[in-house]
Length: 392
Image 1: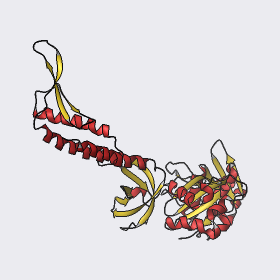
Image 2: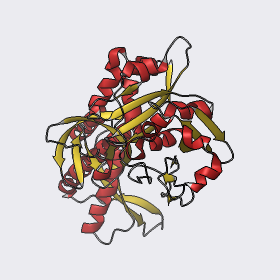
Image 3: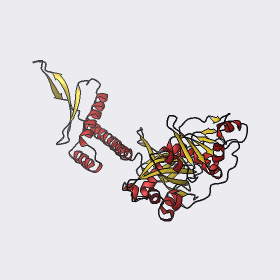
Image 4: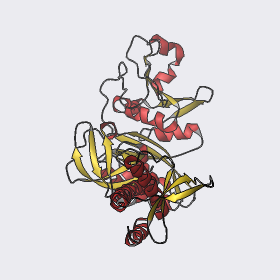
């Protein structure tokens, strides 16, 4: 082999960012393996590549019969140049592929927890493939929004959940249901969040249906809810459109549990909140006319509020709270208006026999309380007034 291949290797190092020394070391190991395969009785042989000229030599340790001294003797076969050329080509191509995979892995490893834009390439029952440019990402069925259809050529924003190493290159797992997607979308749309004036403290999602975010202002002159809603709801509308009509409630965060729970149950009006720190539970009293709104359709509003705050929430109507505990227990066999929601990720405990309360704990685990029945749909409100959007 001549000097030209070494120059080509240096050029690859400049263009691909691959260390040429690592390729040369891998080439020496591959050539030694090829030599031993063709010459079985050469356990003590070694291959050396000259870094200046590119010439390749094979040395073996031999003992001088006269002096008994052990030294390296060149034993390079005449046809070794052909073997070296074939081996060098295979090693260099393999190293280039591995280096490119490593570069892609490192690039997307840094994007874990961020949003990337891709184009749908293939959609099947179990997963959807999304082309990110340099690599295809996997969107599993469990990470897809309910009712969302992914057509070939469709451009979507996805949240990078995980990057794995595999024999075929990096495998990127993305999501459309992760709460981080909603958070990142608001960070992209609201300059005040990117600049640090507004901070998203908590996010709760039931993908494809409804979400709640709690925001706090680090500047007394900036309204956190108004900044996220935007002029006439323009900012939150952009997020809602990207999530295909998923409703978003924006509420102010508060360090006081009573205030935070009251805000989290928006758009319902809360009369009183009693916080029990030892039980991590809040008792909420709402006007009779607001009970259905506070609970939400199939308990969705109460469930999201519990997930947003991280506390169990027990909702009762004003008239029920006024009757006292004895009267409340006496109504066990009658239709009850109490609802209990838990923000903990555990299995639903089901209706309680003594109070008729229902405990629900997460999306998809919905139980209809006795007597609540079909509550009226929540009225649509202007996004600029309450931080709630009902589009879609």
